[in-house]
Length: 194
Image 1 (cartoon, helix red, strand yellow):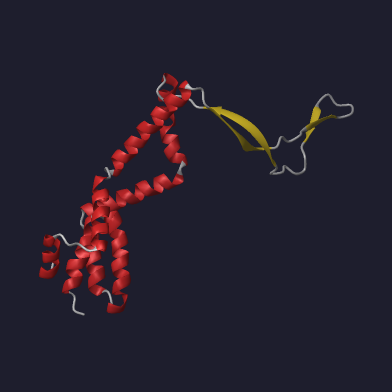
Image 2 (cartoon, one colour; image 1 turned 30 degrees about the vertical axis):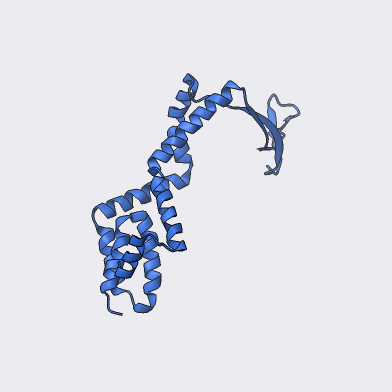
């Protein structure tokens, strides 16, 4: 930090932009860890399900369901069996059906059973989560092995001067995933000749 900026910070006469950035930093520092946020949301959903179940809350909505298909049975003349004839076209027609869904408490015995028996299916059927898990495991292994540090250093070292701005923005985005390596940019870039 330069002496003029340090003196300005010590005097307490911060500019408008610096005050906004300080406020954003303070607010960001108060946000809990993402794992704790996830746990808080789980507790909130369980609590809401209990309260809404106490008040017998129902949700009524229209749901698209496949239209019933007709099957006709023809008796063949002179035979003892039947011949089932199906429509030539099994259409993709859907009809609106009104369904009523009651909120069930997740604190009850059935609710706890539902949580633990549907846990794997919820994650398995939500395709994005599996991709994110695999990617985060890969990033975690690469960061622990310091592969991310080495790749970022090499990328900045061999970057042509015209592409340096793009590279810095790209690495800044990567550093939001890989945390620590992004801070290496400024120290390495400051040493690079212009």
